[in-house]
Length: 245
Image (cartoon, rainbow, N blue to C red):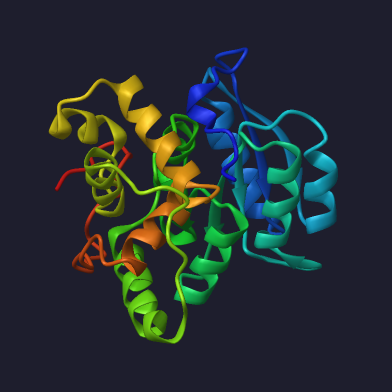
């Protein structure tokens, strides 16, 4: 059964509480300084290992910027632990790795987005805000890679059907998510209110029995509900300032 959709539950404060998980202190120091300049963002913890991340998550966390490769394990392991304690926390993988296996492992663990370190300092503030707002943060090139990997294994595995059939509108929403469109643009294109869109997303996740929008996107590729998007590293991220088709 899907976890509760974080977008349906308002936070008790406008403060965005961020946890940084990376074993490179120079990077976490730079990210902490950058984020601390924002009046509504507070870095509430820095961790360099999976164990430290689990300990830091004893306090309320809104957004986690998570490295994948850590000294005592992986960011996927830490993500599972944090999501178990804070299901509504948004975890954005922040890593130098962009291979399909790492991306899929992160998605299966419950990650809500993926950011490569070569873009981190430019995009991190926008990524934190977009993740907190419930956007799907995934470069279109990474989406294309996921689609290709899913296509390669599709014939070898039995993919379970949804618990309930998706409605026509829900399929439209799922296709839009898989295209990397931000939620605001999806609302406009489909002519539905943001709250209605959130309800559709919540229902989709429940029917597909997934824990995140990214898992729902993988389902869409497996069932051929969408075609693979073109790979173009120059395309900006959906959900971040300056994003466009």
